[in-house]
Amino acid sequence: MVTEETRAGEREEEPLEGDEPEPTVGRGTDVGRQFLETRIRDLKPRTAVTVPEDATVAKVVEIMRRRKVGAVMVVSKRRPKRLVGLFSERDLLNRTLSVRGYGRLAVSRVMTRDPQALRPRDSCAYALNKMSVGRFRHIPLVDENHVPVGMLSIRDVIDFLVELIPEEINNLPPEPQYQFVKTPEGG
Image (cartoon, rainbow, N blue to C red; front, side, top):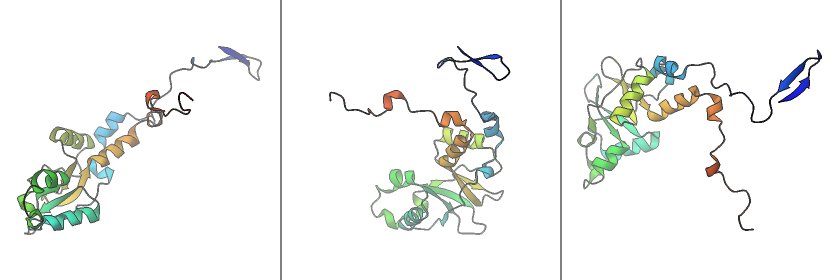
């Protein structure tokens, strides 16, 4: 310890490097409780991108590309347009590309039928649990009539978690074993 004299003539001890107290981590928020109490609607998920069940795979893929989404909700042709399926990048890779002439197929033939869905009032923790257990990257959000109102992506959840994580953790220096060598070896 190094001592330093203060204005009042008192001696104050200042810690040496390495003797500092543990950093105070957190922004004064209990991350777990905040995650449990936050509702999906508070994350402001994307609005629903829907396609009719008779749309062709080629048309749906073009919509996904143009709207920059990884999944679309497939809705019934009758009103109200209720959720009947989900078509995602995984469906394209695992169910569609192996079918000859897949571009002309109706999306209803290769979509995930009756996907699990949540309501905007459900908690973020519940959504994360559903996504983890079901191995989903997207989960549809529906109203009380099962009409799509939005889509929650794992990216939305991760972005929210990053907001909750204390600043000290988000700004940690990289691991030493991953740092780039500043001077060439053997030189």
